[in-house]
Length: 287
Image (cartoon, rainbow, N blue to C red; front, side, top):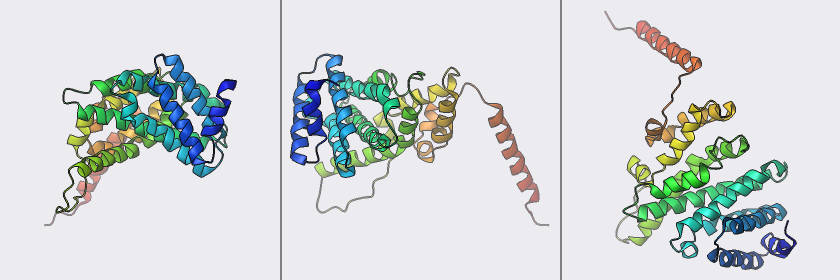
């Protein structure tokens, strides 16, 4: 750890809100002048240790929220998507490098940090994509190619399974939160006191507009490469391919293109067909 960052790290881990806010402001000032990837990496290395030394549950939750919200600070990025990408890469890079060093007593706060950061990164990308009429998924594609596809879902054996598995576990829930929040923000801008608030439903149209299929296509690609970890391939199939929400959104049908059908899947389909035939034979059809 860089000794010069000790005070900065301790301030971020402080239980006092004012002290933490001051340190967060320092981060944003440093990010405004960000040019090199190495500078971004050093910032996140310091933030990683700030989380490490954060000891109280409430302080940990607040710090996770405050660090994640940096990603949705539009004034900070000022339309510079490349700068946002660099800072996003740094987070996942540091998490990947330090994952094995996180002990049992600290793992939960880092899982929460991943959840919060993943949410805010995706929220920013989707919001930027929706606000640009000429964007046909280019921003989401760049985010997936340069960030999530390079680290979390790269298939690289140096990425511990716990990272992509956790993101898989939270992906659908966090997307529901993002779509709901963006709809609420949009509704508040067009607010009419005379109209009753309608119940929000996430439709295929909303999902397609966000271009989130680009991310899931990348994830499902891992199941077709037998050089990838078998445990991860099975985990994707068991937790995403059968996910009712993703099926309703049309994501599975659109993105899951298996090249191989396992013997187990074939046998299960055969058993299901035989059960259906037996049920039809046993059904009383009258005289």
